Every structure is written in structure tokens, then in C-alpha cells.
Amino acid sequence: MEHLEGKNLVSCFDVVNQTWREVELMAERLTSILTKELDTNRLRISTNRISEEPDLAEFDDNYSDVSIGLIKCIPVKTKGKKAPDLYFGFQVSLAGNLIAVPGNEEPIVYMMMSTEEFGFDHWWLAFPLCKEEDDLKIEVENDVLLRWKNDGSVAYGVKLLSLKNEHDLLDLCVKPLMSLHNGNSAKSVFGDHPDQRFVRFPDKSMLIA
Image 1 (cartoon, one colour):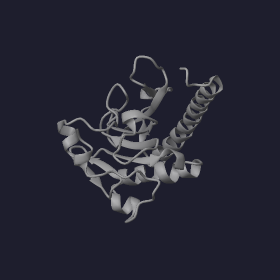
Image 2 (cartoon, one colour; image 1 turned 90 degrees about the horizontal axis):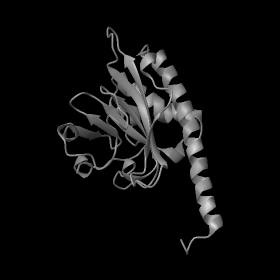
Image 3 (cartoon, helix red, strand yellow; image 1 turned 180 degrees about the horizontal axis):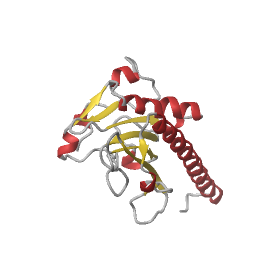
Image 4 (cartoon, helix red, strand yellow; image 1 turned 90 degrees about the vertical axis):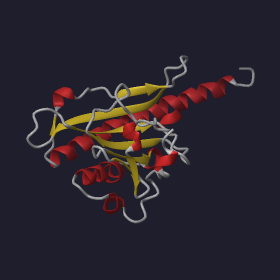
């Protein structure tokens, strides 16, 4: 600690606290926008299955309670289903293996649609992916989309610092997810030259340990 100045240490914690407050506010706005779009697309939200509090991840070092990730998972019932059979949501990733996509050094918001519930006590995105059967069935489409071929689950990443307002949350995060749900291809959703605000994924062989 001899090389640290007290005011610099205090300043570091102030930055971390302010960043996390902004992340929580962004997550609340994104949840509201996503919920509205799910309703617009006539997907019945299973309100009794939604936790008011998001799921959090912390540094895995036994010394810190500093949060580095946040997940919001919204269960829905598709037409004719009595129980939730599809899950929409997002994972805010700030550090560690949550952002360790080869070539990336920025915080990421992963938008996700899955046939299984996700959360830090279920499954989540961290890299490299474990070499399990489901991960081997993953494909990278159009450089920006991860698709699990066994069940059609999808995920893509948006650079957190590119999300400046609610318009960005709608256009970069929510609309592409709903368009993918409606059956559009990755190329039609993201275009021939995807916006640089989307995270680029390398070949899947570089994503799996």
C-alpha cells in the first residue's frame, strides 16, 4: 500500500460506486423497454416468476463484494403454453471472464433469448466457454451473433459505453432481440457490416476452452 496515495484510493472507490449506480439505472430502463416490447409482441410475461432484484456476480477472490455482473431474466409463455418456455433478458458484464471475448477490452451488455432460465446460479456467458456438448453446438453468425443450434437460443453483445440514452437501448439492445425472435436472420438484423457498437466474436474454436 506504500505506493498508493489516500486521495487516489478514495477516488477509485468513488468511480466504482458511481459506475455501479449508473449500471443499475441503465438496467432498470432496459428492463422497462424490453418488457414493453415483449407485450407488444404478444408474449405473455410470467410476472409471478420475475424477481424484482437482478442477479449479481462478484469478483471471485474471497476478498471483495464488488459486483462485476448483473443479469435480468424475464420468463414468457408462448402461444398455447401454460408454463414459461422462453426467457428474454440481458447480462451486464464489467470485468473478468464475463468480458473475455478474444480481442475485447470493454464492458459488455449481452442480450439473450434462451429456452432455459439464465442467471449466475443457472447459466451465464463467460469466456472461454466450457467444452461441453451445448457449447460445441454454438455457432457464430455474421460475426456478432451466438446461436445454439440445439435449441435456437441466441446472444449478442453491445458495448456498454455506446449506450448513451433510451433510443440506444431500444435500437441496439431490444429491437434486434425481438427481430431475431420473429425469425429474421442475423444478416438481415445486423446487416452486411454490423455497427461497430456490437461486439465481434471470433471463430467458435477461439471461444471454447
